Amino acid sequence: MIPLLELRDVTVRFGAHAAVREASLALQPGAALGLVGESGSGKSTLLRVLLRLQDVAAGQVLMDGAEITTARNAALRALRRDVQVVFQNPHSALNPRLSVHDAVAEPLLIQGGLSRTKLRARIDGLLDDVGLGPEFLWRYPHELSGGQKQRVCIARALAPGPRALLLDEPTSALDVSVQAQIIDLLRRLRARHQLAFLFISHNLAVVQLLCEEIAVLRQGEVVERGPVAAVLHAPAHDYTRALLASVLPPGINRLAAP
Amino acid sequence: MSLIRIEDYRLAFDGFEGRVHVLDGIDLAIEAGESVGIVGETGCGKSVLARSLLRLNPSPPARVVSGAIRYEGEDILAMGGGALRRLRGGIIGMVFQDPVTYLNPVFTIGQQMQEVLRAHEPGLSRAQRRARCIELLEAVRLPEAAALLDRYPHELSGGMRQRVLIAEALAGNPRVLVADEPTTALDVTIQRQILALIADLVARLGLTLMLISHDLGVIGAACRRIVVMYAGTIVEDAPAELLFGSPLHPYTRGLLAAMPDLRQPGHMPSGIPGSIPNLRDPPQGCRYHPRCPLAMPICCTTKPVLRGAPHAVACHAVAP
Image 1: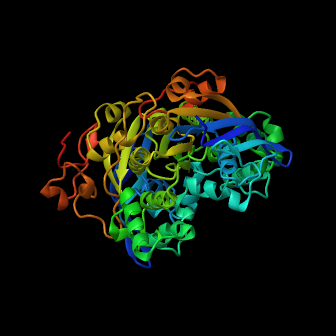
Image 2: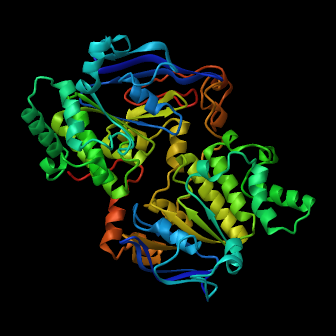
Image 3: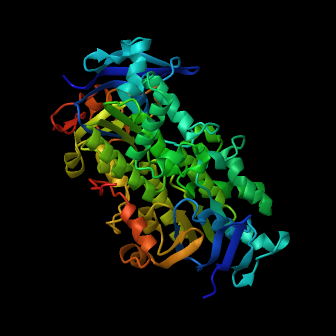
């Protein structure tokens, strides 16, 4: 199968510092790949590379098998429509001056081609998809809770009818009771729309719930990659083992002396 | 006599749009040597409660509506300037969430630590202060402590900065350490090291610990007793093994059911329906009743009392 998105030996440099070093990844259509690692491991830089928001120093970026490493403008139209992104902090990802309606309408208006009644029906459908009732349509971000804002961000990402969502820590700014709701929503949306997920998180337990595959990043390098069950329950790399050993599950945890 | 005793403490914030009832009738007694974890979600009042121990909530807008916070019987809320200065850092040391914002970027680590020491021990000579700084940095297991004194905060990693802040919190030889989400801004591998350090310092120095966190795994790593807060009230207070083994309050159960667990790949966490109440106009009776699966008519009218020992719960539906 031809991957929807692929990175081949990608290196990204910021000055002398290599944020990503010869990283290779493939996201198959409909698959869910988790990207884990600590701060500075290059997770968000890889996401920016996949969105073509970040140029690479070396390596290739491919979409549906076609190289888009240096593509610009019109050549990126398919990428802009088919690959959407949800960011970590819903409080800063929404324009405070746009109502829920206007925020979700914006990508649809950019695409064009919808009559006024069809536009409204599409927005109603998207809000329903993310579990927000019609009473939210004309609300502004400051009138919404963190969980509701993240739902609006997801509705906006779904508006162009993407084939993949890139999710950058979409639940880490939320409370656990809300996080559970968003995880459940993402699972249902993925099944309903046959979406591919690239899910960035430092929380291995959340990755386990949403992804079938996982890639572990450390200092810009992919150190381990494989099915979730294999990587999380029989890790091959020392760093993956260290990450797993650091997880504190809910309950009494005994710590070794420092 | 308990080391710290909070009695019927009510705190409100006066805002332009009315009064926000942030803490509502908090009763909590902490004995010397206990390690108490305060857990709850955004807006439950856990940080405001922690800051209340040091009277750090700015007033206005904060206004104490009723109650007392006693340290060895003396009401912290009534303390004057001198007693308050001794309390802050000398009796209760505090560590905050974000180690970046609590260090001044334009002073070296040594200058900032010396400032703390000058406040606590004005009689020390320059050389004595320097020696004490090195001793404190070694206590938090920072290598090459002497060289570190000349470094600026930006030259340190997040974990190192939090160690420096813990060292500063210990500079006044406090008996109580209050740590407000001390590892939330750190990576998981560093989080584990910092928690192990805090647990070790508490044991070695005989400190009493109050640890604030939204994460039951973090609390479960450093605390023997856990207090669960919701919307400005304490809903459950129990030894850790009882809280995890047989949680009573519907909110505690909801919180535990919402946490994903790496050890249980098949367990799908369930969220708590609804959202946290607006504390400008909190629900009457039990503040959890609009979201509670066990709510009864009495829950809408009468605030439940926190009852039971050692496992206390504030709930009409589940009696201990």
